[in-house]
Image: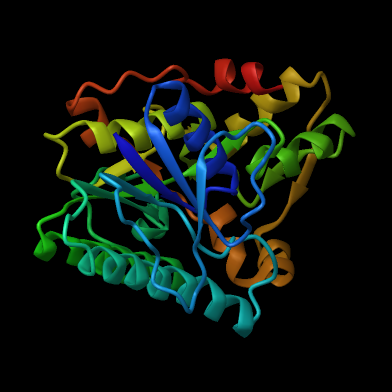
Length: 294
């Protein structure tokens, strides 16, 4: 299968490009940065805001491009987060619309921010959206992608959780702090944290493209969410350091503003669609996942 991957130079995009190539798929990598990494032997095409992407010859599209959410959420940052997702996905749909031969499937990235704060409630793909900036952004983001159904294209929104990876994502920021003995609990520590190993996320995105029967939203999370305080204790144990520090919720909100919701809100999200369709996780539990990455 010839697969287009937008956001191909990002953390998830690179992992997906390499996995698809190893699986024997032909990959077309779309990125704002057309310099091809040395370990790539794939075609590259431009994905820029003012240009409709050229998806000619592609049988599947995995759309991952979007402004990173890390950083202070100034008004300009919030606009960039929202606009990159909405406008970028709209450009993807327009690229599909212009094709005589449409792709079979669009796997379009979203996020578990869709659900908002949910306390101890278990959330699956049928759970209602929450409130706030991230939830509203995800709802609008998915609405744009679902327009591909009207063009005869199967659509799978992929709601991604915290991605644990070697040399990137949340762990790149957290691991050094814990190794210095400065790790600890943020907020109450009771908030549920949903996560996924990068390898499983890339495998799940490819699974969504390959499985013709998969026609629903997919929570891209490991099967076993964990409370934040338990995550802290496991990470501290694996780096052989204590984790005595505590950052109160008010301080997180003061420093990180809107981004603080990602750390303080409780989202106990489970991947009901993936497990129903028989997806097999390599890292379903946190400690083996962290041990592999560390």
